Image 1 (cartoon, rainbow, N blue to C red):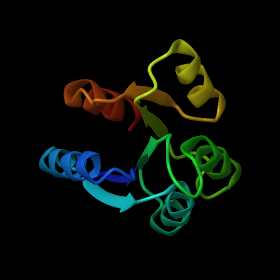
Image 2: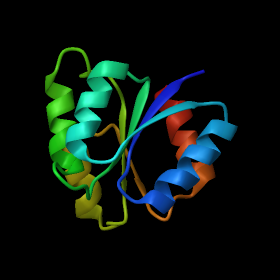
Image 3: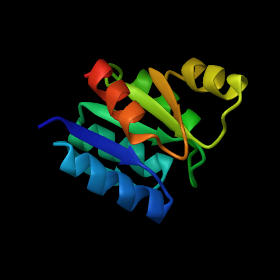
Image 4: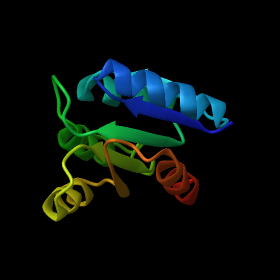
Length: 119
């Protein structure tokens, strides 16, 4: 089972995604902010990271930049998850090192297609 790290501070989004991803056959570990996301990614070395961009403590852009600089996490694909849906938001996420981008509310079929493509 592929292991995913979900970095999400919103409890409702987090619970929904964990349930649906688990049912889809993934093991899911969670982090509640960007700083914890970096720490959990280093400890767990997931196969893929779903990164909310608007996070407390350290935002998703900074957390992704940090992860992409570390040798042990630099190759882990990161999908940005954000309610910001402007073209510039996508460009900003990709510039920070995200491998793909998806908007909230999450279209689960579209998200799982992106996860499968990156795994």
